[in-house]
Image 1 (cartoon, rainbow, N blue to C red):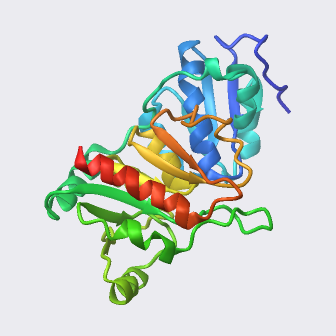
Image 2: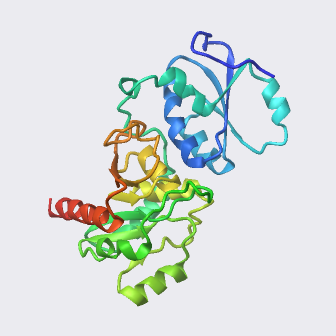
Length: 281
């Protein structure tokens, strides 16, 4: 029942509740605007996917973080002076490209988990540690972009100076073993990590990688939020990029945008060439 906040209303003093967005990847992108509000001494309550609560509480200790499925939602809603959908902040805080700050990272991984994953990765020896995601995690629909099939990634996965780590939430160890038996490539499966539901653990692992190569989704959003260099493979309608070569939301995310008249084989060939340059350097 609280009125909508707009940029003409005060923030210092009044309590502002930010309501969740449907996709967790969008929530992570839009959370990059919270530091702007906190510098204005806003008293914030943020509703989010329950999988994000521990990560957000650590990253923004001054913010009251609430899981989106709270049973006492009516009570918490009454405890605010204004409310706004998280994505609607864009209208007031990001009116043009110049208004996006060059903020490298804004989410804070768990330090103990970082140490554990760093030790695991170091056990594989020299070479870049590269996270990969080849399927999107958005709901199935007719508008879902047609990303490259896993077999089209094989020229990239055969790179000899990199260790590839699966960050995809719906891929099992058995699938990766089968891929290795068929093609001879070895993709690392993070032991004991539920990459779909343990977002805090995924964030800690991702923060220890040298690079992430992924289609748009939760994993690439997490990588960009902790400042890991990320190559995002885009196609179709992509409003996040705002027609820029890098993500305005997350400056360390480089966008490879496949036009309609180029195949994924050709696009991934460009990615392989860039990886060759990186490992040579």
